[in-house]
Each structure stands twice: as structure tokens, then as C-alpha cells.
Image 1 (cartoon, helix red, strand yellow):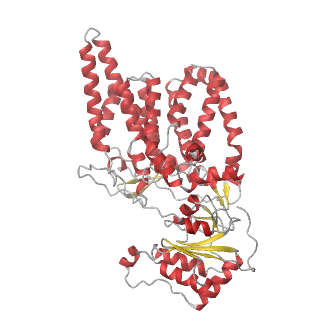
Image 2: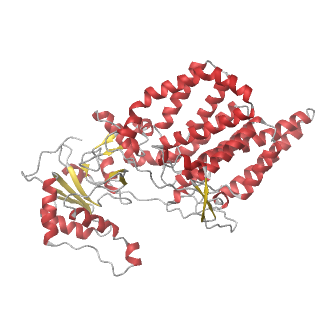
Length: 552
């Protein structure tokens, strides 16, 4: 929600869209290395006067899967796949287990209309269907569009596409050499287009202010992850493997299921002489191996068997890819395999019984119906997702915020997963800055964190973070835990920190967990709240000792 609102705000204010001081003051944050998705923010600009960031995020979350599925359907139709078979492929592409998982909240990983269009463009370049320069420009623009939705998806698509081209070249080396010479102009145009458009964003990502170099811990799949229904599939058939513990349910998207795998194997075997089926199968296998990470895990037990992803694990930028997300390319290739397989059955019947149109219809419908039934039963998700109420600042609180882009201290503080202040900020058109926030940024010597750097002295930060961490869950685990207390020393340090950093407002949501100590602290420091409305407290700090605020 915050990122969707940031792009329209930054463009209107003439601010760098790839860097922000709206959170993590005083250092700011490099947005090019985070899940900014500026293209999605750009697409929502026309409706921003009518819908706030929360509504726009909800709208895109609802539309992302159907838009992705429609893109795959159109590309399959362009490749002369039978209409119902193309619809089946689009269904699997748009609503696979990978998308179901990331549908919990990772919009940038489920808005995927561009990879099928990129595949179609590359195929057109290799078959020389259109002028090479035009196709090269088209491919470059599609790559840039995907980068501005999610660079990690573009990187993984690039790697898997390279593997597919290698497989095609090995299969027909003489033809591949000829295609390489004839397609050089198109691919050159694509590279030039991409470099011109992405030069600055990539520089911001790898060398810009507040960028981080640490290779992050990656989620990766178990050998049996494709057979384990996971927590988001409604039908499990009682199957369960221990697998690798994945703390984030949204990353558990590798599931395909034994019924669908057996059906895909049958279709692959039946169409084994088909070039498109061979390429789709080899590409899917390569993507699946990459999704297993640097070393093989078997039913939750680690082995010392190295895997190809190890080649990327310590490279700049590519080393930060999450191996398990290659499940997207696995599911995309599976969608193509199912569509191609059903289409091949139809074509075979058409050729073998030209006089009997009913045989054609029956065979196609039977193959399509069987495949659709297996897909629906095995992949059906646990919908609807649980909804979350969103609290935004009421009008009296908004009206009390002074002009000049003031710096705010809030409770909740803004650390993950309690990032409500970022929603308040986005809904209020970035009328204030935050010392907290949620984004990846450097910490210490080559370290990386998602939490804000503690204020100096750190007593206030520690107090607010401990209040947030003192959740009912932790309290149930350890009933002897007690929330931090407000004392005279903390009051003195808080007053000094607010003056040192030039904080001009304090906002406390009294409905948040353990907000009473936070309200008590700021009342002792600043007196009674300036404004109180709908459970929110706001203090305006007007001390002449505070430094002049800077612009965002």
C-alpha cells in the first residue's frame, strides 16, 4: 500500500521515486532494492483521486491473477493452441499454488502478465515473424515493464529463458547457429532499450545511497515440496511431508500434486516428439532444480549434494534471489505442457479421423475435462483469505499535523509486522515522516535489517519495540513476561531524543497492543495530548529548541 502511494506522491512532488526520507529518518531508504513496483503505482495514478492506497492495493490484488491468466491465454492462442486448451493453460498460469501463496500479500509476485508476452516475443524473434528492430524494442520494453513490477522475477525469467535457449540450441545446433546470427539485431535492440531505460534504477540498486550488499537468506524447496499440498490447498488427500520449515506461508508455493504430475507426464510422453513439448519439459525441469536451492533437501533432511543454484548464491544482486520463487517458472511451464498436451490430442484426432468431427470433439473434451478436474481438485485454494481491518488517521488528527513535512514518532513504532504508521502516512499523502518503517536497508558492517536503526540514545527505540513485541502470543508462551515500564530516566531520555532529532509530532494508537505505557510515556514527556479522536492521540511539539525540519 505504501509503495503504491509513494510513486504518485514522488512524481507530483518532484522527488526521486527510488529513494525516500519518508521512513527511516534520518538515513532514508533505497527503494530500488525493495519491493517498490513503480509500474503498479503508475497504473493506479488515474484512480488515485477516487481510491486511497488501501483500496487501490485491494483492487490490484483482485485483478492480478485474472490479468496474468489472460496474458498466458492470449499468448497460447497466438501460438495456435486450441481455445479451451489455452484457457486451461491460462488458468494454471494465473492461479497456480505459487500465485495462491503470494496472493496473501505479495502483489508484485502475482502481477505477471509480462513473462508470457516476453516468451512470445522471443519466439517471434527466433522465427523471424516481424521486423527484428521492432521485436527487439518490444522485448526491451517488456523487460523494463517487468523490472518496474519486480526485478527478481525479471532475473529468474532471464535465467530460465537462457536455459531454454541452450536446450533448443543443443537439440538443433545447426539451426541454432543460423538463428543466432539472424536474431542478433533484434536482441541487440532489446539490450540497448533495456540499458537506456534501466541504467539509473540499476545503479540505484547496486550502488545508490543506502544500498545493501549482504546476500540474504533464501527460502528454497524440498525434493518433495511438489507433492506436499501445503497450508493453502483445500484438498490434501492426507498427504504430508516434513519438508523444509518455511516461516512465511506465502513462500510455500511449490506444490503441484501427484495427480497433476502423473497427468503431465502422460501428456509429455504422448507428445514426446513435439518440439514445443520438449522445450517446455526441459525448461520446467531446469526451473524445478533451481527452486531446490544451493543444496538438496530430502523430506526436510539436508544433504551435501550441491545444486546449480549454488552458482548464483554469492553473486551481487542475483545472490539475493529467493530460490523457492523459481516455482513460478515451474508452474508457467506446467501450464504450457498441459495446454500443448490437450491441443496435441485434439490435433491427432483431427488428422486421424477427418471424416468424423464427433471424434475430434469427444477426444478434446475428454482430455480437457480430465485435466481441468485434476487441476481444480488438487489446486483449489483455501479461499477466502482472512481480511484485516485497517485503521487510518481520523480527520481531526490529520488536521492537527503541522505543515512542513514534520518528523513523527509513533506507536506502533513501525517495525515489522506492525507497520500501521506507514499506512497512516500513505493515506495522508505523506504529510509527515517516520523514524520507523519496514524495508530492507544496511545495518552495521555489511549487515542488513528490516527494522529502523535505533535512535541515539536507544532507550526510546528499545522501549517502543519491546512494547510491540510484547504480544498476546508471547505473553501466552511466557506468562512471567512483563512489558517495559516508564520511569524518570526513560522520560528524560525521550525528551532529549525528541529534541535531538527534531520530532514535531507524536501519534499513538490506543487500540494497539500495550499502547497504555506508550501513551503514559509521552504524556509525562509532553503533557496532555493536543488532539484525541477515535482512539488516536496526537502531540504537537512546538519547542523553540527543536531544529528546523527538512523537506521530504
